[in-house]
Image (cartoon, rainbow, N blue to C red; front, side, top):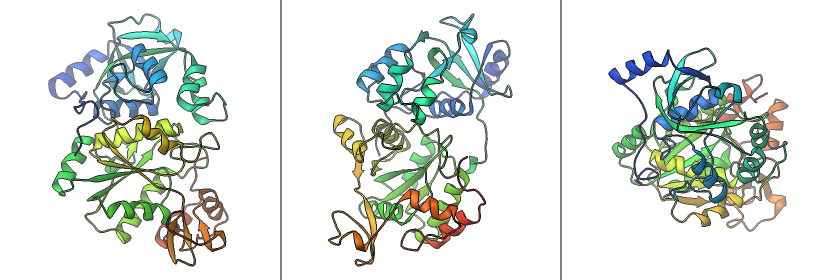
Length: 382
């Protein structure tokens, strides 16, 4: 099992007397109201999901990530984790101050120790992270809507907020123990934001032929319009695992963070996160974390050549499809038959089938999975 990114699993969770003292002191601190996405970022920092980060990026790390795709200490890192505030919110805040980070309904989440306060160029952020400044890209649109200043500094978590997916949460310290208890020495992580079709199952089971276990780790959080709702993703994966996987070969747990749709740079980020959970391998498919036509189909695979020191092994898969003549799921390197014999795993076409109330054929999706989606009146994010 690999060491966490940076060599140690970060723990910024307060407990016992330290937590009680911080909770009491937070009542007297200046407050910053944070979104639900930032709440999850804070929890991911505190529990080591985002190791080696201990807080929100300071300016040196921020500029290094944008320019070099590494932290200032040369550790690979591709997605800046940021806390933005308005100039009005920042009034009276100085380096060395502590501030309370609270939810919109005033529940305390964490205390932040301000180490830096700095401005940034939103155009540069968009171009360097997403490769475009087109506001049609959801990540760019969000970047342009950020507030004017960034705060950098370590955080201490004082409250973990439960939600509808709490039972699916496993922290890195827990997955590492679980994998050891199962006797897994090699673990492949699988990233998804969709309900599973037969192509996904094919990829996971192909990987299982040479690793001990698969860690199915759906992203749960803010997504773009037209993506599947979180509840459906989890319910369908439960059904797939219960009906079609050996009991001790698969673990399902959520990664609660927003999709950023940063294509190749998000693929590296996703690999780092799964390394922190204890994975030795990470599946990277066609157009990983992509959106629209912003990235080349295999850009997310090619970028791994730039990070030989990542510490997790990528597994690359080409486009796959159901071949009626072969009688199973195949890919471009295994099937000699032409397009006339192929049924492609098109997410767009599968979504359109569900919108029409149609059940995808068994060559595309397990019936137990399709039936769960069809029972929902509206299975997609509005």
